[in-house]
Length: 420
Ligand code: UD1
Image: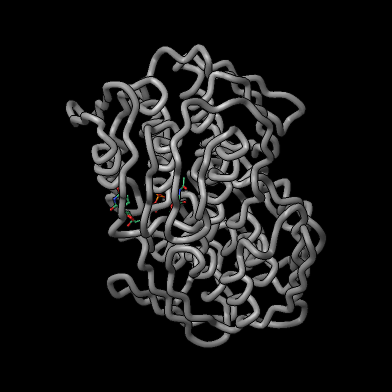
């Protein structure tokens, strides 16, 4: 199993290119199942989760061709196995995103239930209930969701009790080929949901209202092929900016967009960073200063993203003052706090709230990644700790960060990957 070895104390300086968004490319690749025609996806990040969804589509019968590093061509005209096995779904919950497209296009699907994960129970009941309301016959048996529909799915008025990102995406994809109009109320407004809608519209779908709480989808009989470029990854962008802020550095993130992470930029400014932005870049300058602790409360977009909570906890551990962090999106998303404490962090946990009193320096220790964003927070902590931190189980980080050690090393960090 690979590990990261990080020797802290170097302020990050320079420029880093941001990759395409993991949470956009996964639903977009699943969305390719909705058309028989070839689709070309650009700005695809090289990530383990992308490999997983490609395997999933490939074993269903889709042809996938990777060209020029960042481009994938998908042809799903020969898909004949509408099946997502447990072996793949258990490694990536987002595999559930094939359920809506398979059902809409092929009238049937058998998809493993994702099960629990390190950040809480994360059920998929909204996905299943929404598809039922669209006329699907769904049973859950032997750990699998078995879904079928006679003819086309039917347009319906759907309403989420709690905002769900992949739930909105799954139902939006199902509705694209349904008979009639579907309305999704209390829909997720995340930029990745908007990106998926823009992609589907580029193939001929009729989706309106994406980016607002009400999405309206007029079903069409079929989608055509097309070419689409994936949105930049706002979480990757935010992670590098936090790294620069913690180390007292100055970096520019390129090929990204400031308007997809305003809540994060606002908190970095509150922590004392100077931020400037252009059309496709963000510069953060924290040279010569220690960050100030910030209070965070996670919420659906445009609120502060839960996927940046762990990184800001790492920032707060070395900031001046006390920061209170409240996690409202997921239960049990403070696993990283226990590992950060092993590096000397002063963190008090109370239910879904963490109080962090900043200390001048963390101390290097062997730590273990428990989920994707938790592992990012441990790498950030390693960048400022005195000594050499060993982060184990970094397969979590490889799910969502393209070439993280190369990118950090390019910014001057002392980090390398070793095999146990
Ligand atoms: C997506 C993101 C993930 C991010 C999360 C919240 C992808 C691939 N993953 O995950 O990175 O952290 O949004 O921004 O895009 N819920 C239910 N029943 C359901 C569905 C969700 O109770 O059927 C609950 C969840 O347990 C959670 C909340 O709704 O408490 C929000 O989860 P959701 O937005 O669905 O997260 P994901 O789409 O899995």
